[in-house]
Amino acid sequence: MLSHGELLDLAESIKNEGQHEDIVLDADGVLLDGRNRLAACKIAGVEPRFTTYTGNNPTALILSNNLFRRHISKGQEAMITVMACSFSGHSLRDMSKLHGLSRSRLSAANVVLKHSPDLAEQVTESEITLADATAALNERLDTERLRQYVINADTVRLADGDTTPPLAELVERGDITWPEAHQRAEEFAVHRRDTIQRSRHALHLIAENWNAVQDLAARRGSRYAQEVIDGLTTEARVLVKELTSHR
Image (cartoon, rainbow, N blue to C red; front, side, top):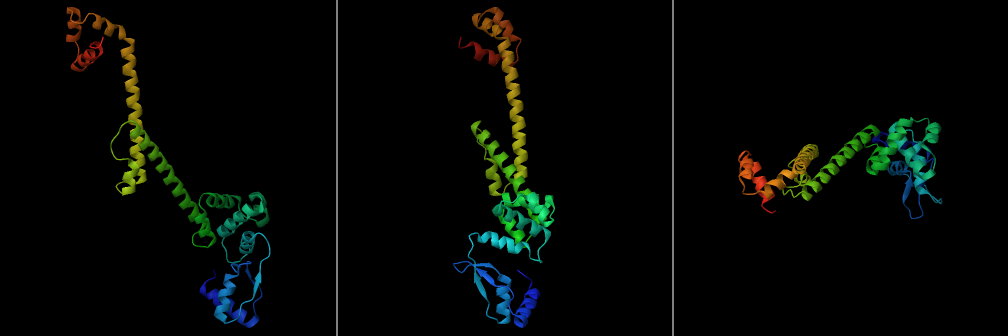
């Protein structure tokens, strides 16, 4: 929409010179183009003049008409252009050449439109800039990446038998943030990986020396077995007892 001052200027122009362009409605009376003219007519006290759109692509009409408004920023123009491309089938390269728009700006608008239509709409309505929309989208995508990582870590922790509250649940309760949950999830992943490696190493050592365990089991109760066990740590004695008691 035009600013209040611009609407007053348009109303004065319509009052003095008449309404130059019709306000476009669809077959059901829905406004497709001309909301500023309609508002100005009401201010001027002039009966608005309407026409009915008879084509089969009202969205393309709206985008096309808004693309050439003089009161839009380059970001808005880029966003409206990529919206038009989605209906017209033209490439961004062609539209860049046709309208003299930066390829990088069109690409940024295309990414916002693809991933966050609500932000794209705010850009076209001049509620936020394309740069702000891009920054907001990046923040959303970063948060979603952190959230998915945390959820995956919670799934692994649950499968491992961990009974502590899921990190995602702590975030939803407001106890921690997604970045904090992500850090804890990464620490869990590192600790889990190191623990698995140490366990594998320990089991490999047991497997490599399994003959000694079998020998102790076969000679359990002998003086030889007792002297071997006497030289072990308490933890090793417990392990030997567990390994040999079932043979």
